[in-house]
Image 1 (cartoon, one colour):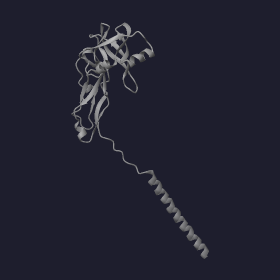
Image 2: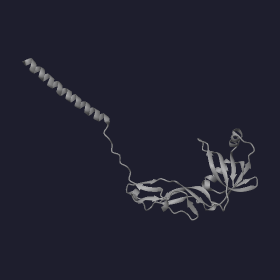
Image 3: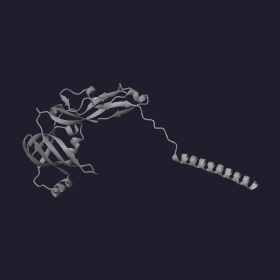
Length: 224
């Protein structure tokens, strides 16, 4: 994975008001920390950072943060976005070393067409990201799971996925990743109103019969 360079400026003012002014000017408040060095408040261009994060490497892109001439290898973490607009409002840059493994979240994509879906089955994916550990340069952009052999009832677990060399999976290998299932068929129940109407009709019928019987008894008594 190639590095990208992002220019940062040391941030002297702190607090919500200065941060608001920075955001309105197109900058993102940020902090750089890690590797047992002091944390440094900085600002970066929101537009440039968003462009980097939208690239192939996403949040695992290696960013050489240029803080006033001092370039530090970092990863963008703890991204905070506006709840409605979605634009970046704060980010942490974690310093890393090329020779030390780091933790990362990598997208997991299903590829291929499962034969079971042609027979009425439903492809169900349960995991969409993988927790891994790898050297910074070995972090993959994504990991794929091939579903082209799955029939109805077949499953794939984490232990069956091809993980790139130099990447260590940090999850239970028995976790279920994807499966082909038969859709559930729900039988429609008869409306309760019909049952009520039937019950009502039955009660009316019984009432009518009882009334008829009562009338008959009265006639017999009067005839006597």
